[in-house]
Length: 172
Image 1: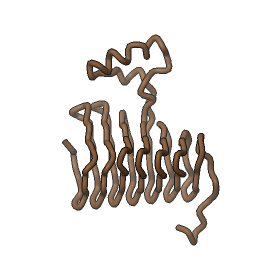
Image 2 (image 1 turned 60 degrees about the horizontal axis):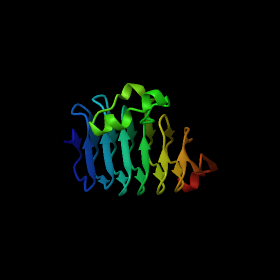
Image 3 (image 1 turned 135 degrees about the horizontal axis):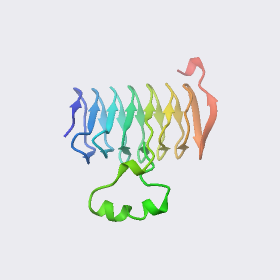
Image 4 (image 1 turned 180 degrees about the vertical axis):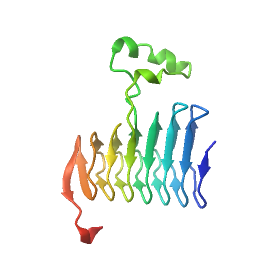
């Protein structure tokens, strides 16, 4: 089911490839306790080396999610590179019928890549929305909703997440 998995990686979590040509690549020495979901044949989900994804976390990939090396993603987080539904009611109203038939027209929903850079720590129950890049070494506070890019070596928190402080050289 996985396209590649690195040596020393443990995968007690759940893989749900909903499209047979989607790609999931996981690096070495990872622990994946959460759920990895790919939705389309164009989905590409990559996870670097020495990365942890906590239990109850859902990473839902329509197009592209890249997670770097040495990343910690706590429990019950959500990373979604798509809105999952159209903002137009006339389109959205048939979504339930489509889901019951295990299909969905992903061309009707907005999707933008997510990139989580090396050394990032994402706190429990944080939500990372489409189009976001979280810079190297950044920390996302528990329960935060990240709607825009996070600069490297900063701590963000809140809903929507905002910079709380920069991480100085001696804390890196």
